[in-house]
Image 1 (spheres, rainbow, N blue to C red):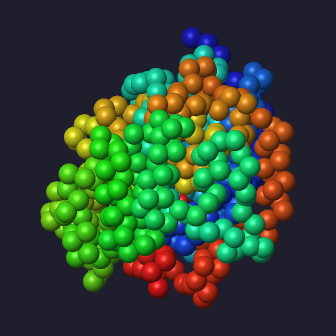
Image 2: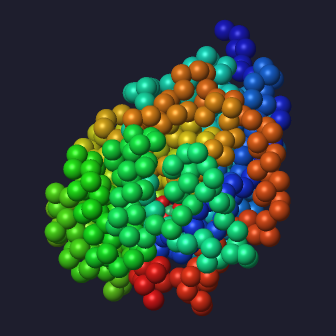
Image 3: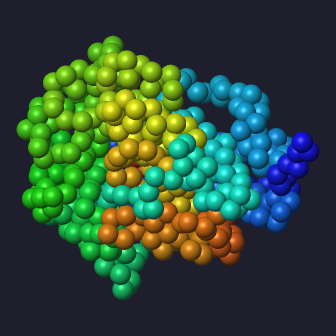
Amino acid sequence: MKYSGTPVVTEMQVIPVAGYDSMLMTLSGAHAPWFTRNIVILKDSAGNTGIGEIHGGDYTCEALRSCTPLVVGQQIGKYRSILNSIHKASTKAKEDDGEGIQTLDISKLKFVVKAEWAIECALLDLLGQHLGLPMCELLGEGKQRDQVETLGYLFYVSKKEKAAPELSYLDESNSKDPWFRLRRTQMLTPEQIVEQAGVLNGKYGFKNFKLKGGVLSGSEEMEAVRALKQAFPDGRINIDPNGAWSLKEAIELCRPMEGILSYIEDPCGPESGFSSREIMAEFKNAVNLPVATNMIATDWRQFYHSAALKAVDIVLADPHFWGFSGSVRMAQILNDWGLTWGSHSNNHFDITLTAFAHVAAAAPGNPTALDTHWIWQDGQNLLKDTPAIKNGYLEVPDKPGLGVTINMERVMEANGLYNSLSSHDRDDALAMQYLIPGWKYDCKKPALVR
Ligand code: GKR
Ligand code: MG
């Protein structure tokens, strides 16, 4: 039989971009006024355009650009072979000590993120368009749902004026949208966190919330969790201190929260010579709460040890860590084993939002509500047709491929902002210096506890 083949990639563009952010607080410090990403745009011989988005920074940008000769000229139907050739050609960076992000050392995130997954996304977008099928139909066991439950990702926010004029954060005080006005203001008390959740519930209909912890003392953060549960008695409330608490502290803080928290994410990390996987397994023995992670299982080798120790119940398998096919493969395994799939996120544009919607649409079983930072960026669209979040659910486009159209004018504006920045890497210590002079990262000390 004659094999006619599929369209061929004729062009690959890598465009670094930046967007605006609030002074969001985490264990690693305070978010800068901007965040960076990389966009991949592929064109094929059928005249279609495929897109992907991934974390920013020069390291990832360079990694993507170096893949170009392995992608251009190849058939889109051979996307697995293309990715395989990229894997074979890639080498481990000298500075990558293999620790991953088990202590949330943000400088190591770029080694956990794999640049080629943005290429995988763009290739699946092209292949979907060629076949006339939405991307989720090409993953795992195919489409499982039309919309994806999403959580309201709550953050403590510091007073941006403290970093001015050197760091100038976006001011949206004149916006007509109550959420847009609120998201750029200080929110550090339980009342303000409940207000944040209320305004988000009003705009996007979220019923599930995750509070980013590791900022105030554990007991203050649990007060906010209790207040949230009181305000949303039927809601699922989670907290993620990114491993800031010691095992003892985590047990003391979380035992009384059984029945209040729906799960706890990365409560503790490595200590006393034990790995974070061992410590989390001990935590799970002591506390009757499901445990989620995006820190101790970020690749298959780490997952093997996490699973063997029964250290986690919910793996937040970010497609930018695991790959799109890899994340769905994880969802299949977790579902077969009676465990739960979800996805972690970092600041992102709407291309990632759409791509994650397709992955979550293909995850079998009963995934936990998807993380997304998008609410903090909403309005800075790089697409002409950003999928909406309504009643707490993200729409999964049903057109072929990703099912969305890139807005090149907005992409080039975001590229202009990127080019105006003096540094392209995430550095949460920079803004922290304006809140606490001389502040240094300590994976065991909440950011504002010094
Ligand atoms: O965006 O600051 C942030 C988050 O804290 C991010 O760095 C984490 O990786 O959201 C992530 C998480 O769930 O751990
Ligand atoms: Mg997390």
